[in-house]
Length: 211
Image (cartoon, rainbow, N blue to C red; front, side, top):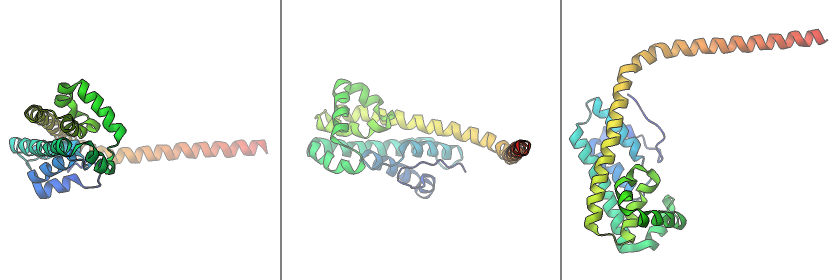
């Protein structure tokens, strides 16, 4: 079973997905959008891999992933709209949301509102800030919800499909890699040892000739 590392909160995503299935996927994506640094792309990619191995079906997986992101984004939008910038900054500092970062994101959001809403989910550092920006700027809830839903479905589908093809290639080649990896490592280690030994012998000879 392929395992992808690097999860920010040191949670073994694959184990969480195995235990809780669709709910686990939805939960991780929800938590990321309210500001908790969960590894969303990693979760989607692993889910795509698990899909190829029969753990998930595509439509329920896509629905669970999209719903988690959409619901989390909606909560973040509500916080931004009804509680405002001070609350976002007060609690956002614990997850890396600073005033400077919020100001930069706001400039980009107000200038390129529609493209940011549709494409911003593909940029990890921007994705979490977009719903807060939309709420703070009093963007129409209807417009936000429509663009957010479209973006969430496309983004989730893209990473699930990436995971699918990673899983297919892994299933196709991992036996060959495993078969030849160990002998290759042994041969490489032997060659390195021989090279280091020859170099050490030459140095000794040079020292003797100098003496």
